[in-house]
Length: 348
Image 1 (tube, rainbow, N blue to C red):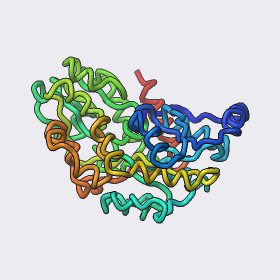
Image 2: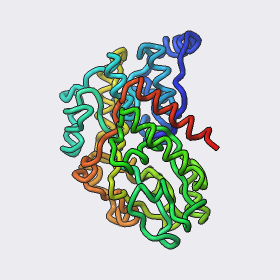
Image 3: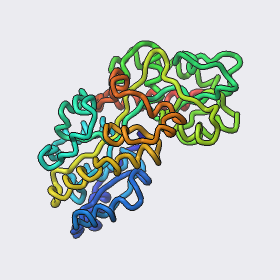
Image 4: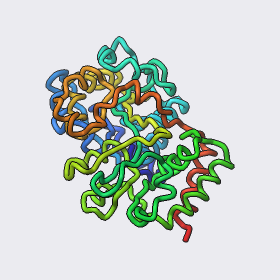
């Protein structure tokens, strides 16, 4: 659930990877910055005797480019969003998740073990999950109820609304407003939403994936298109910043852990995944990043004051899984998404 950019590829990248990773003897974990406890790897080494190195990626597309260029060599565990885990599986790059070696899968909610993109956690383990919706200043605007309030803001909200710029979520808001699938593949429906968002652009304050909650805190924005966890960052600074899922629903976003088939440390990789599913290790994510985790043991142990302050943390799993997970839509549809968003951004 991170901001996207183009895939990296090419022989030069493959050469750089082979030179930097070929001699690595430690397990290599690629993850977003700050996505696990700072002392997690030290604790893992103390508990298992296994040394792991951390490699950071800024986006899903960045690590996908590296993994594709190296055929998965040089990495052991990746943290990627679910739709990218699907792509890696289709490319034959993932090892199966062995439940015997990852017994802490039992800590997951039942709903997290029956997700449509990976029934039974055969190739991925959900690490965080959540919704996309409307983050707003409750003291400055009435509680919003519909995605249409983003696409066609009232006169009072014009110039005070932001939308996410990343293609899946920008188009997703339009898809949901029209009652379409968040994984829409119909070219005419994509065009309809593109045209609507070009018209919407004139009413927006900005397209903003990273500072929208700060704009809410300052009062520059009154209503924003937001991921639930990021809205919580605004709530930290101003209790009037609140989150709601519109009546038309949301996507279900998931970030996952996957193990590379080319790993030379498979047993260690499974041990690491199992370690991250331990109650206290997984709870750190909810307590410090303010994202929901699909780990019942971890969520049950949260301080009630935390879920009282950040109410979307308490969203029941049964409610989350009512929403459609973001899926791999295939190369042709993804290119159509990219073209549509490029045209939206270029429109005057």
